[in-house]
Length: 488
Image (cartoon, rainbow, N blue to C red; front, top):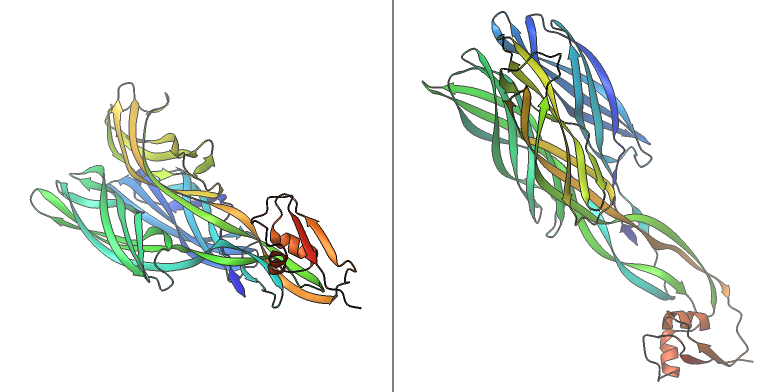
């Protein structure tokens, strides 16, 4: 009997730097840079996987003709190692930008730190045996079967308006938050939000705005059954913005392609053979212990971060803020410390005007630490993802920038346990028969009637028939008689 006992194994994140040189020939001053990374493909092998990813640089600059932007894209690869990876493994990985530094104007030198993290679905199949003709001790237990939900894409449209005439879009950065997933047979109904950061030019000035667009969709999943739990993540594959202007406002039309993928978890009750014997026979048994996921926990929480940032003394002073570049959230540390905590740093470049009318920029970093919940029973394989859904800044006195940000967290965890399966049973030879006709057995504490029957090399039904006064379950101290037929 083949038993499935799957597991989602969290991979150890890897962090590394990449260096690039970007040629921005028309630049007089670099205003900001938005760097994003996306997965291209994964090539699993034995013990490792080659991860092909793409890094996109969007350089916002001021040239002789005003504000403009230029995009650069590079495809690179990295190796992720784990003993559980095989050539047939299903890996769900994410490539994210932890931080980015750059210097220069027309020749911009960049150093970007990337992180690759994710998990691998480990499919465990155990060939468990049920001995025929033997006396068997069984118990029931739950195991979780995990099915991969392949990447599925859908398109969505939305419109937004901005006061004034928008001349051009300099930066368009969108991220997805999956809010809920409801399941029916072979169908997942998903609701979520698309958060889009825009930097644009209006009346010759640079500005920024954030839009939130809710969406709902259904995807077909042949492996899904009623009662399955489904966990999905989303990303924007493509997003185009069309400007439709009138006399007063600018209408922005968004055409967005969103990709969703993840996995489903189904709990199945199975019977496990704990022990077995054949009366009158010497037997040999083989067992295999398998670590399985006992429970999967997921929590989704929205949190607000507030704080302030004072620019360094050697930097130009602030008269007023112009715009905020798309924020990034670095590596997330998730831990159990009397509750479920997440901590890390949010950062964003803020463009501002100096008292002498020149334009400058500063990287604003805001640390955070949240207790998401005290009720989180899954302490293994902890991991977290987060999306900054809004980031607002305003200037205070003494060159202080006040920041208010909102983050949507998704935290995953599980609990592991070991299940022992019988994988082999054979009868070796006849057992030597005792020459004592009557045996008196005194039950020990925590012993069951099955334990007594095995010790006396008989069956439970025989002991009940010979000892009709027995009360079950045994509590210890019971005197149990067994009459053994003897042959000459």
